[in-house]
Length: 124
Ligand SMILES: [Cu+2]
Image 1: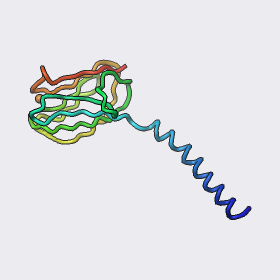
Image 2: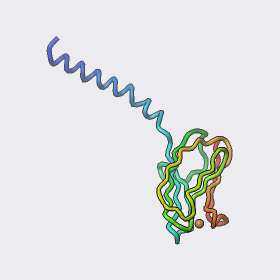
Image 3: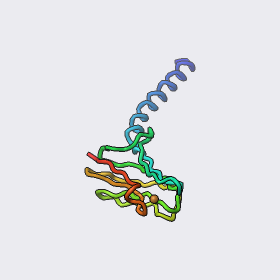
Image 4: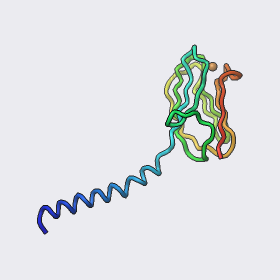
């Protein structure tokens, strides 16, 4: 076996190993959702998926919810089966919540302005 052949085999072997690892990594990735509220003058609250599309239905399972709360008068409060997460009204910041969503209806909203700042989605 020449040195060149040995090198080729080594490169091919590394490519096979990488290909075998990649699908596992993709499967293990937890879906990310993005919640947003604020700034103060913006009386809107949103929950979108990684593509920026409004969340209306989801499959049960583990999710990572990244919440951007840029307001000291609004909060992002998510409630539903097994979940009660609140970014805090006075608090601001970027939060990451790891949640397990179960079958049912989840609601999110801003507590001080619950009648106008709200949303919901269902998990099946
Ligand atoms: Cu509010």
